[in-house]
Length: 166
Image (tube, rainbow, N blue to C red):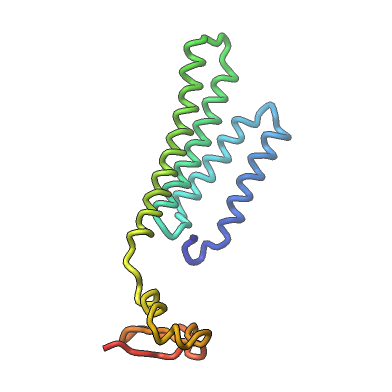
């Protein structure tokens, strides 16, 4: 998720998508260059703010923007080649494919790593507490109680009852 204070970042992402779409749609002659400039600005915003709570998500977003930049840049080069050579075109297209494939593989790697952490995570005190026989007997009332360690803050005194563990 987003770091505290960056819940608006979804609006920034939507603005980026809309602005790039508008540039491609309405400024067809100069859209690749303007798109690169706008994309560089959004890359700078991403690097400066790092809006995501986890560094891996900030890194993934940065790599996504770099992949988009590389695709636009190579597309601009291909579009403006005076005398296109077949070998050069193949190399440039392979660069686009490799860049995007790298991003997809990296994203899959991070997803698998995250799932692996979730599977191998030891149960928290709250998760263990929900398995106790007392909670099974209490039924719907059990959700109102939460075990906490000594010294831990209680989030809401109205909805929870402190049960300290020695």
